[in-house]
Image (tube, rainbow, N blue to C red; front, side, top):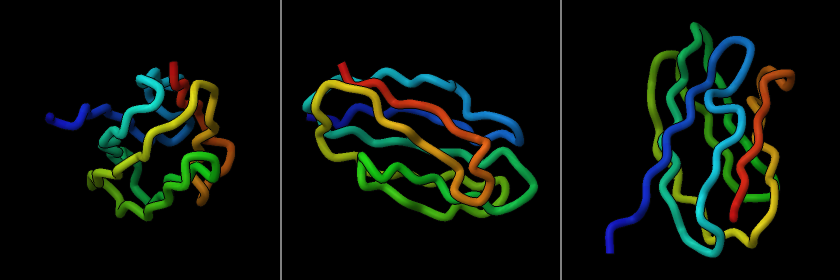
Length: 88
């Protein structure tokens, strides 16, 4: 089966969407676009993903199946920029 793909964009002051809903217990691809003028590091300790993305570029991260719940996601280089992934 094709892996479900979800988009997340890093902006200067927020993640878009700030709350991303994904199906629980399902591996997904997370396509992260860095919409800022500087490198960004998308990170979620809970989901065990971490990736540095150069300015203006897009990277695809494989997210392993997650139990239902909320998982914080942050731009490690600018920690005020954060969001949440909700597995449901």
